[in-house]
Image (tube, rainbow, N blue to C red; front, side, top):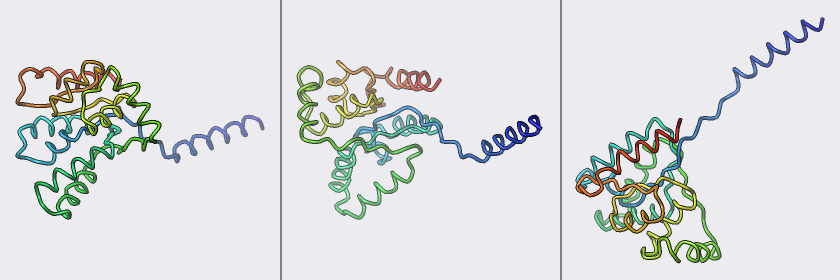
Length: 192
């Protein structure tokens, strides 16, 4: 009798396990900085091929794409300046979000106290020379331990001094040609 009950319990557990929806494994967190997103959206951008290649490399890894609201705001503003129509900028951002192959994470909405705290901690020694939007974006990436992808050389050089997981993705720069292989190696190491 006990054997029969045990067999039924085991069979029931197996059936339940087979019917349970498994949560998808979320890959590494990758912050896409504004210049990266803009290069991805514009086929005429000199960095488009490199950015598209990296973006394609990330596709099977189900990354948590960390795209702060500051990035969306900056990208929207740049597209609006170029296209002169709000509807065009909205379409471009909607298309980008619909093609994002991973989990979208917009970061946190910091309070004034949190912003001031970030300035006290990060601006004192680490990334103080960045303009305000770049400071917020870099701070989001640093505080969430994201891999930061950028095509902005100035931002890269200022953040790189104190945060090793920022990567300069640009095809026109010989000086930083090793960042793309370094990034792919780090991603592959992080998913093992």
